[in-house]
Length: 451
Image (cartoon, rainbow, N blue to C red; front, side, top):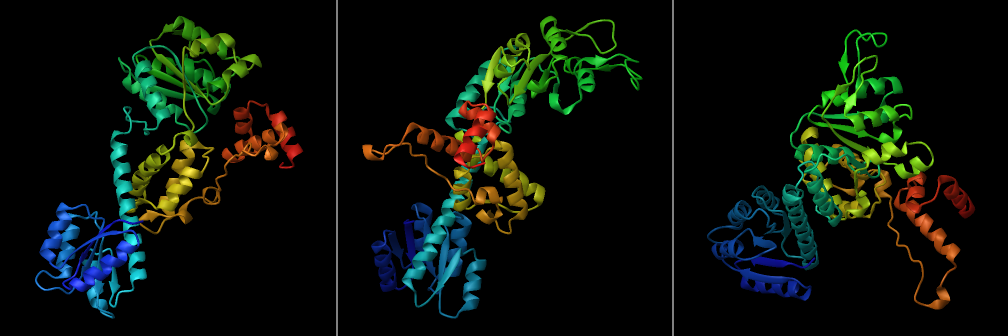
């Protein structure tokens, strides 16, 4: 990766020789025989790396190295030492030099050291840019991302936060539906408590009590009355996560509560009014559930006043790197490590992977990598096997040559297998993306011989 190199040596012939070699290989190079002049150049000019001879009159190379590192820590310094002078090389490294080479200089080896130093600086710049982007990426503190899908989401959330309408948040598992609900809550006024209820996590009887509360003596062990979520969140927000899993027998009672803005606790005689905003979330197609009789149509329309669809991580481009850097900074503190970021190879792996588990899967992958890595930067070997071994494929439906055009059935087969690979062979998710029911998808995969 060619860059701009400053050569510092009291021997002009040496400077010219190194400069000529670098020019032949695409680098831009300037040189100086004075440490004072070189330091002035580093502070004024845009320099990507510095090559310093440690033995020079006046200010020596070690002192120059130390001054450059103190004032321009982003610029890597490579020191030139006499052959076999290990003590001098160690002194240069202690002064902050990134690397060292010995005389007589092997120019091919020197170029390799420059390539490594420039890649190191590029990664440093990337980490700095990601950290800066993290600070300004979103207008909602809980959400991270600056991709076009996320910018559209922010605009939608700005408008939604100024209303009291019910909101249905849809999207694949792991896309951050609860984070979006909390972001809406944080921007709402007036603001009371945020109470989240996971519909599939509780048995039906307990879920009814969690939602609506219960009176004293309503059932065994109900020794005192208890407020449900709607009353606990008075003036705030109730978030109903995975509402598609709400039992059919509870759906009419929820509808009544939303319509009349009152709840009747289990075992109670009177209805109690509440003022609470309702946010719901699902990773299922509720309209299909309505058609198949698994979800009440009237309740669907009541919670679906405004719908917000979250983008999957695979459609968010460089947000993947932004989120990965965010998780690195979070988990390095928990693990007590000094991990600064990840190598270029890791970045490529993260961008190529399909992320069927979305942000949740990325968070887990980065947490694992930070815990296992032995270096200041995460390397590909620190990633889970599913990400390391993933190979990006490009779908080609037809070529320019008419003789190579393929039958429609072959196009369908290629596309189905492509979608299946993109979602890491999650057949339920693939069926939903393809608009097929699971039985149809399984029949096709059996016919293709991939089951």
